[in-house]
Image 1 (tube, rainbow, N blue to C red):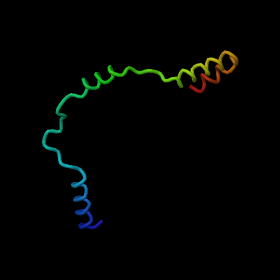
Image 2: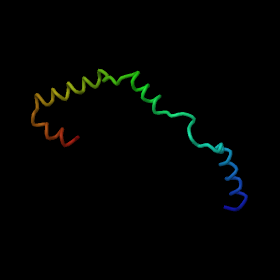
Image 3: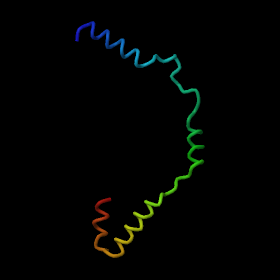
Image 4: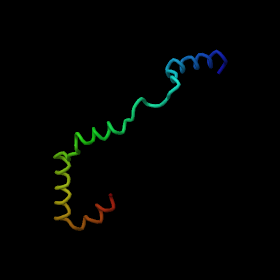
Length: 74
């Protein structure tokens, strides 16, 4: 790379990344907002997860010899 290409690349990078204003810290703490968001929507298992669990239980009930294979896959 010659000096013109380096200067052009430097200019492109400076335009792409805005300069920091002197205080790189966030204006507020994000953790309390994250905790509120987690409390609003408790995690629920969709019906498909229950169907997979029932299928796995059925396989284990009808084919107990498959238990070592299932444990190996985990």
